Image (cartoon, rainbow, N blue to C red; front, top):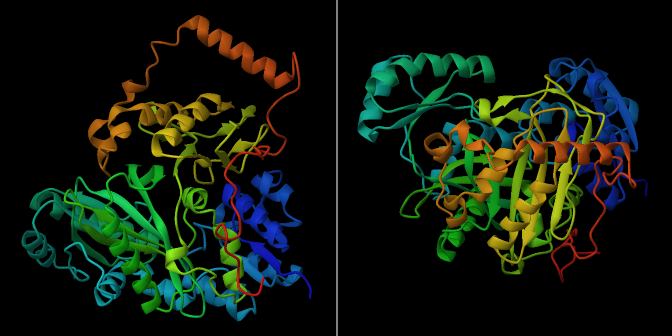
Length: 508
């Protein structure tokens, strides 16, 4: 039997991650790239790579005609969309499926069911998943929105029904703010998502963002793989994720997990998904949304479960049955992920771009780097400013946290400003250590001046610069940074396998 031929319709670190999973499964990997990405790691890693077009996303990664051209030219049998771009576009899924290619992901109908946040609330209600109080789709008459907001109680969120990534969402503390936000949000929704439907929802200002990772096969089976807390956010974008959640009670975890699986199976879901909840001060969970794709923060789930989610996705796409029952899923230890982003946190998290002159990735026991860049690369203005993810595992949360601080100290990126200093500040903050964080924590507590480093005097800066230079040019010994951004495996690090420890896929 010939190898499955997997086209990865994405770029950067997630494309590299999928290529690695495909290679371990024995699949042939096909990368696509823009002119700006011609020499990036995912292009060099793949078995073959094909140019889509110029750097602009609508001429390359969002160019449906060019992706179909590559499908035809390569004989791709499967397509993995990663996250972002076309990953949650049901029309894209239909077009690929109609071309005879198997999607590594859910059906177009499942994506539609969860892509409309109002419809998703209805589906969640039918599955008996607890909901944040909210309204149906709002008509143009602002009086209707005002009536709903006042019945729910301020503060409220005006949200785009088809929104995502923090766009199409505005917080309103009173009627005046609501009146000013309605048309702005409706207009942003229409421009960003092609649909201007909006609704109003109760705002839980001190809530935690806690999500459940699911895997569902095509035979009606589903399991949840524990939770991830993603409360450290700026502009509704996650910055730090961890598992397990520090305050989640076992009975609440079970309630959330079972509700998430029930919701997925009710809509005939297949493959990986994440159901997101808000956890209020009393520990009560409320359904937020369902992400019908692989999440950015999936590595921390892999680190504590030993389950390779990408390889699981590929096997599910091949029609295999999940090899686990729920009782087989027993996460071990704790894991933390820090998103490494090209941005200036001291300037309001302003995105940065430019050449990367030199990189040194942290290594060692329990450290993992998911990256899509290397020395000599460039952070382009055309794409998202997240350039990689740093993940650590420990026997408990404190060991994972201390390991993350050590790894952040080892991280060197020269040439473009990053948020590494911010991540060090956050991981060392007493509130993070105590687990006392929530989704608006940074809005209320972070100030740019907190990143000043009075302990690092000019002499120390000079020594650090000389050391980085010597490392870059190889003075005094070999350069330690890897050639492609792939860190040498530590023989004692937790292993990520295609199945849970002690389990196997049926028929294998």
